[in-house]
Amino acid sequence: MGTGDSTMGPGIILVLMTLLYSGAAYLKSEAYFNETAELPCQFLNSQNLSLNELVIFWQDQKKLVLYEFFLGKENLNNVDPKYMHRTSFDQSNWTLRLHRAQIKDKGIYQCIIHHKSPTGLVSIHQKDSELSLFANFTEPEIVQMSNVTGNSGINLTCSSEQGYPKATKMYFLLKFENSTELEYDGVIQTSQDNGTELYNISISSYVPYPDGMSNVTIFCVLKMKAMKSREWEFLSKPFYRVPSHPLPVAHQPSWITAASLITGIFLCGMTYFLWKKKKKQRAVLSNKETTRMEKEKNEGIEERVKIHVPESNDKEVQYT
Ligand SMILES: *[C@@H]1O[C@H](CO)[C@@H](O)[C@H](O)[C@H]1NC(C)=O
Ligand SMILES: *[C@@H]1O[C@H](CO)[C@@H](O)[C@H](O)[C@H]1NC(C)=O
Ligand SMILES: *[C@@H]1O[C@H](CO)[C@@H](O)[C@H](O)[C@H]1NC(C)=O
Ligand SMILES: *[C@@H]1O[C@H](CO)[C@@H](O)[C@H](O)[C@H]1NC(C)=O
Ligand SMILES: *[C@@H]1O[C@H](CO)[C@@H](O)[C@H](O)[C@H]1NC(C)=O
Ligand SMILES: *[C@@H]1O[C@H](CO)[C@@H](O)[C@H](O)[C@H]1NC(C)=O
Ligand SMILES: *[C@@H]1O[C@H](CO)[C@@H](O)[C@H](O)[C@H]1NC(C)=O
Ligand SMILES: *[C@@H]1O[C@H](CO)[C@@H](O)[C@H](O)[C@H]1NC(C)=O
Ligand SMILES: *[C@@H]1O[C@H](CO)[C@@H](O)[C@H](O)[C@H]1NC(C)=O
Ligand SMILES: *[C@@H]1O[C@H](CO)[C@@H](O)[C@H](O)[C@H]1NC(C)=O
Image (cartoon, rainbow, N blue to C red; front, side, top):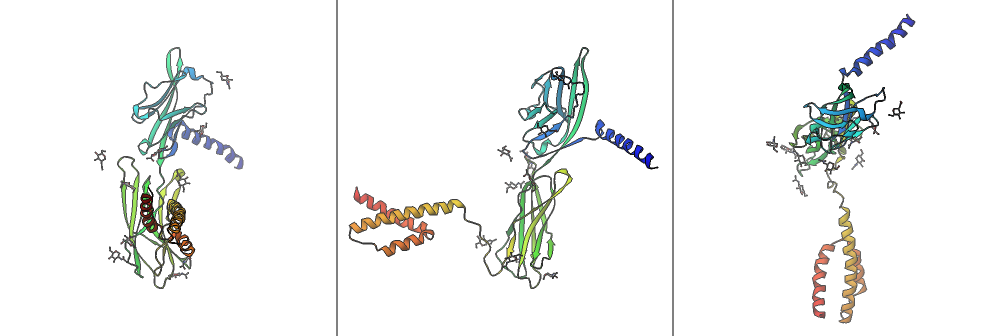
């Protein structure tokens, strides 16, 4: 019996392989939105035929030609405008690259190879592949819907954009200090972009706090189908409920910090300039005052600039 099994096994596998690779099943190809897709041809070229005696082309479901390599050189005459300048042929592995893939590009493609013989062109190979497209949703973002800091619950909305395919699930996840987790569903709204066919999604929900909770962290979770039949989960930044403290404020953009610094330096120079001038006019500005102003570099700079700049202009006018 053991020997019978071992001879049968490979036989069955061979039959299955033949079924899978005889064209009965499509080759699967996957790409990200706006990136490069690969449409394989899987031509083995066992006879070592030269490209000069072959006609290779790819066409879509509507029989529109994406690319043609005719007896050794590219032939753009039959290429549909929609695919013009969007493809490149990788001769090393008989693969066509489709650049800047759009959601609209998903579907079935055929690679066809003809051989030039004395009697004319003879079809020697054909391979169908199915292209699927994906786009990661943006990081989900939680927004508090009102400033009412009720101690029994909170109204939250979470949104995420520009994904494909549609999200499979979206919910709020509450994590407690004792590591207990709770899920909250809500009203989900989806919209699709007319042009790109990408989806936006948002969820709104009243999230109640269980009694006696002092510290709870809220996340927004989005799930979607991803490449290779996997499922991906995208998580928002944590949203902390701290009733007695103000909500976390977003960090100042670095350019504001830089601007503050430059203004500060400008201010120092200006102070010195004014100080010298006032000294001239025998209206001495005390050192104490200068130090105080330097200390306040990071606070109330805008106001000080507004006050000092016109003053200096006035003085300049006096000079001229
Ligand atoms: C597609 O990618 C190009 C750069 O390769 C970029 O300029 C363009 O904005 C992208 N388009 C979309 C819709 O993301
Ligand atoms: C295939 O043909 C090319 C010339 O057309 C030759 O240089 C190469 O060695 C051949 N390869 C094989 C594996 O026969
Ligand atoms: C074809 O070759 C290129 C590199 O030359 C590689 O990036 C790509 O993955 C290959 N595609 C297939 C379908 O083998
Ligand atoms: C999409 O998200 C996954 C998981 O976070 C990541 O591995 C992948 O690189 C992302 N792809 C793109 C094109 O952003
Ligand atoms: C919450 O308060 C901030 C200022 O403290 C204000 O900018 C914001 O619009 C308020 N949000 C709502 C939903 O009332
Ligand atoms: C949440 O929204 C509901 C309905 O819009 C409203 O009745 C309720 O007062 C809100 N609660 C809080 C804490 O904002
Ligand atoms: C709440 O708990 C998180 C971890 O679960 C912790 O990082 C955070 O500091 C806590 N906040 C307060 C105000 O206790
Ligand atoms: C954690 O805290 C929640 C909220 O108070 C409570 O419902 C849950 O039973 C607690 N879990 C454990 C394991 O203590
Ligand atoms: C999706 O969200 C983006 C960014 O907020 C917005 O520009 C776009 O109009 C939205 N699209 C749809 C179909 O709602
Ligand atoms: C999509 O856009 C086209 C033209 O750009 C317009 O005719 C059509 O009404 C739009 N459809 C939707 C659902 O907005």
